[in-house]
Length: 397
Ligand code: PMT
Image 1 (tube, protein in one colour):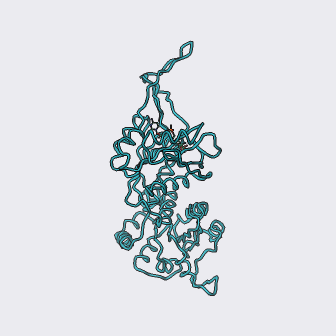
Image 2: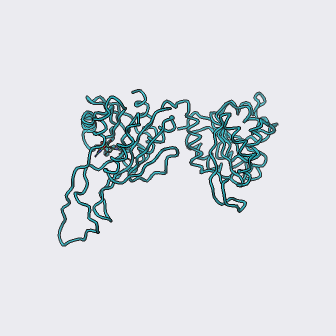
C-alpha cells in the first residue's frame, strides 16, 4: 500500500520510544521506505541498531555525521519525505518545532521539510496539559501540522492521565492517509459501506448466519477514508478491528441493517454493499430456548427485504450504487442479472470456488460486472487493493 512512499520517522527521547519500533515494522510491511532520525535523548532509550535493522536504512542522529559527502543529510531527508512523522514527540520537540528552533538533526530536518508533518505526543500529563505545550500544539496546528493526540492511561512516571502515546495502529493509518493524500479523489464525498454477516435469531441462544468476516467491507471503508471520503460503515457480525475515522454503526439482523442503511442513505453520494445479508429469517423468534424433541425439526423462514434493491429503485441515477455478488456457479451471468434487477451502477462479483476469493481471507479475486454482462476480471489481490479498484470505478461515475 505504501510502495514508493518515503516516511521519515523522527523518534524523540521518551519511554514510548520503543513503540516506534513497532511502527517502523508496520510501515516496512506496508512497503514504505522508512528513514529514521533519532534525537540524542531517544538513543538513550532505544538502540539505533534496532531501528536500523527494522528499517533496513541507516539511522540519522548526528548533524555532523554525513554518510555521503555530496549531499547535506538533513536537506536530503527533508526532500525525500512523503510524510514526516514524529513518534513519540516530547514537549521539548513540540516547543522547538513551534518556535522554528533547529538545533539538532530532527528539528533541523523538520524545519526544512515541505512534507505533511504528523506529530504523536507522549509525555507526563502535567507537561501535556501545561498551557505552554497546548499553545505550541495550537501554533503547529495553525501551520498545518497534524496531531494524533495521546490517550489516557497509567503513565511510566506512575501518574494516571492524558499523555500515553496513541495506539500505533491509529498512528500508522494517519501516516498512510497523509502519504496517500495526493489521491484524495473522494474528498467531500459521503460513502456508505456495509460489511459483515447478518444474524437472524431463532431463539435467545441461536441464530442463522454466514461466513462473512467483514474484511472486504472494512477495507473498503478504510480505503475510502484514506481517499478523503466521509465514511459511514454499517457492520453486521465481523472479526475486524475498528476503522479509525469511520462512523461505524453495529447491527445484527437484516432488518436492523435495513433500518440503519435507509436512514444513512439519503445523505450518501456512494453506497457500497459488501455485507452478506440473509435473504431469509425465521418466521417466529422463540422467547425461550427451543428444546429438542425426539424427531427432526422444521423451520419456517420468511423473506427479508432486499435492501440493495430498495436503494437501487429509489436512488438509481442520483447516487452511485454498487453491490457485491457472491456466487458458486455462473458468476458473471448471475452477477449481471443482479446488477440489472437491483438497478446498480455495477456489481462486484466474487466466487466461492476461486482460490483466494470470498469469505474470511485477506485477498479477493473480483470481476466488475455491469448490466448487459460486460465484465472486467482482476487477478488475486489484497482486499484493500480490490477496494481501491472499486473506489476508482465509483469515482469515475
Ligand atoms: O466479509 P468477507 O469475509 O471479507 O467476505 C466478503 C464477501 C464475500 C462477503 C463479499 O465480497 C461479498 O461478496 N458480499 C456480498 C455477499 C452476498 O450476500 O451476495 P448476494 O449475492 O447474496 O447479494 C447481492 C447483493 O445484495 C449484496 O451487495 C448484498 O449486500 C445485497 N443484499 C442481499 C440480500 C438482501 N436481503 N439485501 C441486500 O441488500
